[in-house]
View 1 (spheres, rainbow, N blue to C red):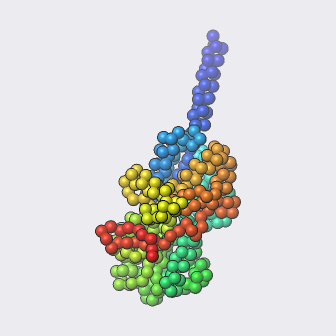
View 2 (view 1 turned 180 degrees about the vertical axis):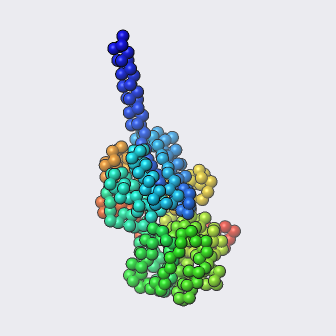
Length: 384
């Protein structure tokens, strides 16, 4: 009798174990580390909403190759040390298939080697070229490179006959990396950086540093940051009665930054992807249909205007989904599939990855945009 009972218990355990294995095989865990709160929340919050929207759509449609997506979003608050701790939690405890994000360059730089050492895909939503240069086997990113953003700004300055600029940057990974690219590429375009100043990412008033630039009589101001402090730059320039062009980086691609400037945002220039001007693109543009659909879906889901940052998360998620479709639920095969993906239409551009390029975007991923704040509302338009 005792032997029979043991056999029954063993049989039940085997059935439960088989059921658990089947359930695990039907689900794929995807981790995300995003700055949902904190100074980079204008980036991380739309990224999180985008991923939630996409995971719900995927699961409602039956999953990826029949596997439901279990999305685990962790809020880093924009803190690099916390991002590393969350990465370890996702990899070692949650056993995720891949990690999407982080939102900022500093966080991405902090965790990329850990993901590389643990053979787990990282698809960053941050822009610094240093995230994917030099190339690491398991590390990719979706935003356009900061070096190409710099080239667009310098080319525009040169077209206007402006050669002497003042540079501002926040004291973050993104800000420092952008300043490095500005200083590196200026000679190539015949641009002289007369003065460069760094400010704290939490600054609420930039009159002092802008005053220093004005004293040098520069012909334009170029600012590099992704925090709300960047909205203070045009405000200070106009407050000081200074009528020079103000350029922002591609980290200005959320209308909330322009709205925070008020009328001072009018005429601010910045390179960005086409999502922000999707409605006016010609119908023949290969990105238009995707951009219009994402914008419409996101704004219905999140009840707010779409931004380039949510677009970066859209690209990270859909690229991962495609890699799993091609390579299956094997990490190495999916990584190889992603690395060889060509002609993939995303919000930031058309991705063409290779073993030597884990960003996959070129100069053609940008347009020069400006802010029209003359009317009742701020809006982004193509610069003429």
